[in-house]
Amino acid sequence: MINLLVVDDQDLFRQGLATLLNLEDDLQVIGQASNGQEAMTLAGQLQPNVILMDVRMPICNGVEATRHIHQHYPWIRVLVLTTFDEDEYIWQSLQAGALGYLLKSTPSEQLANAIRSLQQGYSQLGPTIAPKVFAQVNPLIANNNQSDKLAELSQRERGILLLIGQGFSNREIASCLNLTEGTVKNHVTQVLSKLQLRDRTQAALWSKEHLPDS
Image (cartoon, rainbow, N blue to C red; front, top):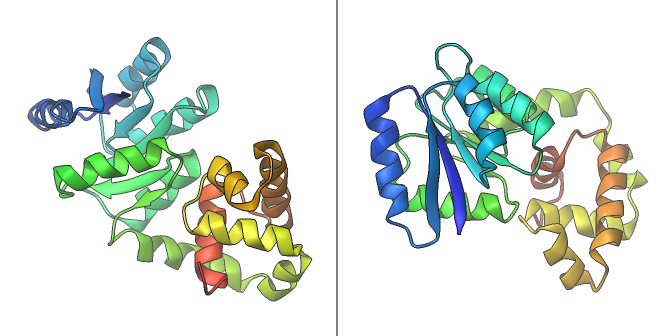
């Protein structure tokens, strides 16, 4: 069972979404919050697996709440669900630690599947969101010699980076390459360091941009 916390200041939307998600056999909404401050409190009390986080809310917005939760409870996965697709909100949310960003117009079935994928460690970006993220990443790429960075990676590290871009978790990569999960984790750390990337989400984006088979 995947335990969820739904955070949104629109009561009717939040309650309706909770009702829809509770219809899924493997999803359970264990709490609701109307602002980021409540979300931070309930995250600590309820320890949900996944938080559906709105961006614009009173008292404390979703970006600040996401940053706090990611710092204090890094095992909780945050999926931003909002009506706003402005570049600033997207980038700030991902930098704060969100693993996904979807619009509220996403059909409930797709949202449920996105939650399941997020729980498994896969990043989730809506079809109109991904191009905006790449647009933010490209200027960073332009400022560095990416071919030189890629050359610094060993063949094993390139293979792992390719699998990250395809959405594989560390456990799945370990199984695929016949390695221990700890060894894969060490390789991922080296990849992030050599490419000067912050986290797995940026590594996946980098892989999709620079490794043609990802």
